[in-house]
Image (cartoon, rainbow, N blue to C red):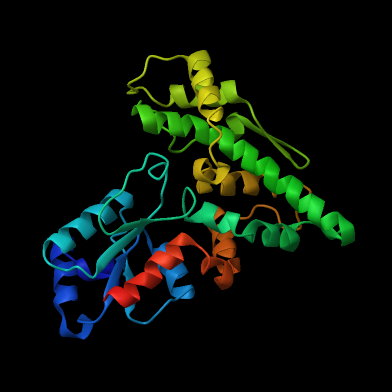
Length: 286
């Protein structure tokens, strides 16, 4: 099956997917719809079985959920979707035929699986990672970025729960993030103010202090940081830190870092995830 985006032309996306699944060549296949092309590459790299086909509408989570629902309603029960959990798992939100990543998103699942340690060891200056320095150095950087990403994630979680209409797209991280050695620091008041200024259509009248208090209230519920941190935030902060003298290679692109982490993910670690178990069960169900 070729890429859905390449195949549709002027045809309706759903019609193309229906035709593909009705093709006799795919009669014993399982279609797993994912959010984007890089996700297809990831699942093909960590391939479970040739019977599983991965493809994508390249339009994000809502389109994956809609595509799976439409195809299953048309009688194609061997169609499933894989989406970033975002905050849905925390709120017990589910959709028929949809599996979520174990962590907040696929990037955070990879980070939880140890890819950042490999990244740090590969790109940090050797005098910082030699011998007994390696483990504490990696831990310090990873925890610093995790904590900063977690602080950013708390406001996003509040926005999810309250549907406040805050806009986080295109944030200018240097406006509220500073890097000092291995420390990545969030100015929370500046962060909240930055988001408010970018959200003219927001549906909340809460000001900066009020939103900070809401973040602290959510923090007291002690959620797992990997369910709160956003992978894009983490990767951007990692880039900011590795644009400093700690790195042997400055000015790396975000997609370059993301690609390195996806390729560094260990197949054995993936096999221990809930997502892997869910996909594996499909082979016995169909």
